[in-house]
Length: 89
Image (cartoon, rainbow, N blue to C red):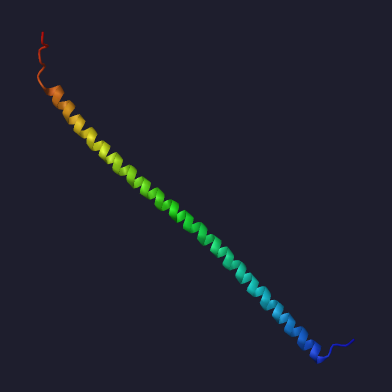
């Protein structure tokens, strides 16, 4: 059976359709991969923001604790510098 011009045209059209379908399928695959990567990046971004907020909160707590320690230190120095009182009794 010899291929006629119509058969060749049909085969060529089917071949081009197959190439186009494979090309579109690979684009969809890349879209899925990019969507997955973007989702992971969003999750990481959220974790980083949460960690930054936690670090900021810890920093503020540490600064408040340092201020209280400075106040206590100055009171201790006042007590150490005060004249010694005689015990009662």
